Amino acid sequence: MQRSAIPFFPRRRALLGTALAGVLAAFSPTQARSGVGKIASGARITADFDPVAAIWLGFDAGHAAFTADLAQALWPHVPIRMLVRDAQAEKQARELLSNRGLDAGKVRFVHDTRAPFFVRDAVVFGVDGARQPFVVDFRWTYYGWSNWCRRTFRGSQPRPESCARADGLDTGSLDRRLGDALGLATFQSALAIEGGGVEVNGQGLLIANAELWNSRNSGLGRAAMEREMLRLPGIRKVIWLPRGLAHDTLHRGTITGAYVGWGTGGHTDEFVRFADAHTVLLAWVDETEAAAHPVARINDARMRANHHILVNSSDAMGRPLRVIKVPLPRLIERPVVLSAQANTDYSEQWSAAQFPAREGRRDGDTVIQVATSSYLNHVLANDLVLLPDYLLQGTPPERQQQVKAIYEAAFAGRTVRFIDATLANWVGGGAHCATLSEPAAQA
Image 1 (tube, rainbow, N blue to C red):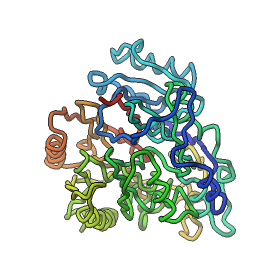
Image 2: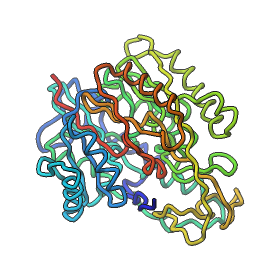
Image 3: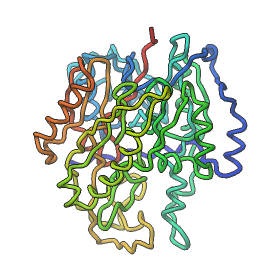
Image 4: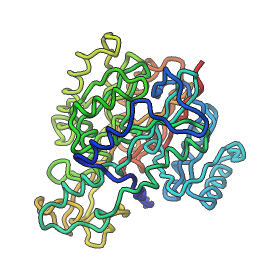
């Protein structure tokens, strides 16, 4: 089935070297902006397992069926809100909901011309000491786009026109605009990251993928990044993991040999998630597949390294973490013929020009794309756990049943359901990416 790819939303211009250092100096640890007051002390970035006031969805015509599936699954468990680009998109979204028997009149719509389909990455929420939600405003670099361009197109290799574009202050301020629309205060951070790369336990602990954060904050060392992380609301400790899943490449890229991927470069919501303040879910590779498949073998090595760090780590209060291994689905692949006719930005077609010249790829070559698939890209919505379904893509039923049992134990009392998110996986996203959790005012 063909559908449109996720459009690019160039955001805030990446700041490098001394320029970034100047930005860091400009922001105080407690800086906030809002027309409705400041953030009260005791603020913290909320965890995914915290109570949810609403789930936001985006809208893109190419992903309409997936959006409808998400809305239908979530509807009995949490209010739905939608961030859409304009009145036409709202009209289409209302029709979509109505066609599924859902009352679109109960959905709050907010318009923003820069509204992305993968809304998770646009906004990060927190709750302050007065129990009021607020927005954390991270910088935006369109998933490390400038850094990817520099690494991919070195020397005399021609760069696509898109590599010369600015990252877009207008798009980068989308999170603040949504906060203003909701009457929420905003905490500004000098760090660049997307929501899918922010994994916290809500009690002071942040798990960070070092490769991911480096790609978003080029020119800023780990020590400087960690200082800024510890200035984020409620964060008192950082656990650094080296790398994420191999098939979650940074934009389009080679994994190994003929295997290629299209992804974020290591979002934590693909491989490591908190189930509660002391329990961590970690993606895990089947031993037989690791022995037989080169991509699974890379993932196996990476997740074992991450596991070693996590089991020897503690939370912000010094208590050891409980680490649960969650099997990965069987890798999903498709052959892709490189074509000079491919649009290097928006099309799901691929061309040799999208790869570094040093790799020697030519149009007409066939590569094997591996979808960014993982059960860890789940959605938590109060009494619901929504998991991606991979049975139709070849994952053994007994493995998916094992995953269901793990989630039922880790999230006792919640209903576990499955949803097909494979089409989003092909462009580096999933169910968690396509939803945004607005926290409930905490009691």
